[in-house]
Image (cartoon, rainbow over all chains, first blue to last red; front, top):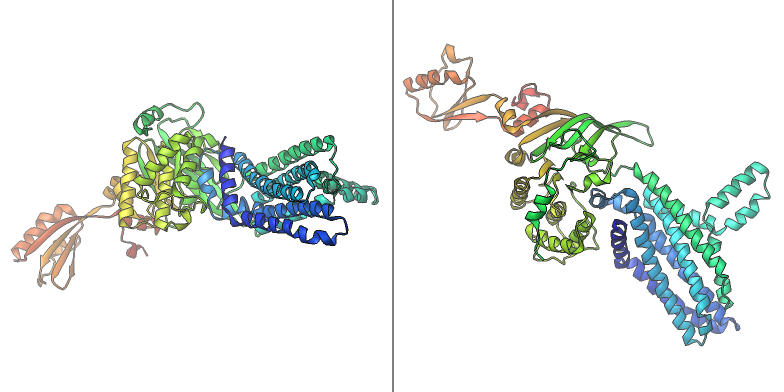
Length: 254
Length: 343
């Protein structure tokens, strides 16, 4: 219950912040620009619109995570607003979970708004059949952002905003290349290969959430992938937030 | 809906002893060998916050927590409110160990120079504070409006906190600390940043809290306020508890002098038998004698009157809390000793 109160406050903070509004406006402008590029796409207009639209949603979401999420806890400590919360009967893990839920909620609203705009654009262009595939891809993009937000909360609870932004971006990139890392692991001698393999399994498996190319071809992802991705996101977030809570438990707020 | 402050108060102040906690249910705060030190991650140097602190605050009293800057006051208060973890020793609040978040259920805390969320207005912030202190949504809303008015911010309840002045933020912080009628109030420099009217209001609020049975522990550098409010004061120096006593005990123990003011500048020489106990100072329009041994007062007065001196006033002098504190802080052995002499 208290996690939801903190989540509500975080959501309110994120949605009243100009960053989120600016990102939504930028997303809408970007969707409009895809219509200018369509005539140059040599018959690949629908693919271009869907692919650019979904990629834009993911990238803009990542921008919000980096700009807001990585300072989510650090800013509260720096500005000492955390005193007002943690001097009340709130366990520290509950506080972190609340922050994560709040920002994730704001990101889902952003993803939802831009997805609806993309869908309206597709309908207006006579491409309504792409709707379900786009919806599915946007759902997975939202899950991906939820996972990255958990990572941002972890680093934000442990480090300064600048460092946590760098760490989060680093882990995001490593996560995007996690399949390649696994492939690399087989090409190295046993010791190093095993280490790379372990790292590849520890970083978030973000390609699992990427079905943009399927959506651009108007194809649905297998339901099993949706289920697996949802389960993976839930488990990964639980592990990362548990780690964050354990590290945050002994922290002093100066 | 009416705000059920009275009923609420009776219900919560039933004196219910805690199942787990400090042995004495008559204590609102207890620390036992409490030590907090900080290790620099870069140099490895250990910096002391507080050391072996044994502090007891009785239920229902107002205790002032005094010390110079860096003495460990804020560190102690942060450990008690769960913002810092103790390095060694233990602490309890209302019978519950401070490590448990439930210990803060009946606690109200005002941090030093409080900061709040810029994206909220006064009512929204107090509602959030009330809800986090386990009030229902409706109760939190009612109390938010009530307390905003009570601390003098009720005329613009929807003003964004980013537009609040320092004094307004301090008042809002106090309202947030009092909103849920806590049994224990911990206030870190509650008068800081307030004008004389604000200080008076805060003093009245603190006294009101005692009247309803709450315990108040507060740190302050404004010693006249401490003297006016506190049942007892604890003085902490360099991280260690130096002294705990009532203001009366401190002042009584400080010794007493008597000041005798006389008109003009009489050309008098203090008799031999009074020289050990009497000093004189010449001022432009008067002479002031200071007697440090009360039983010699009749002798002194008789001598002055026989010499034809116009005695205007005879006033007993007590050391103020400020003088006592400064003497203690500067290492004076005698409370009330003139700090200039100590130095």
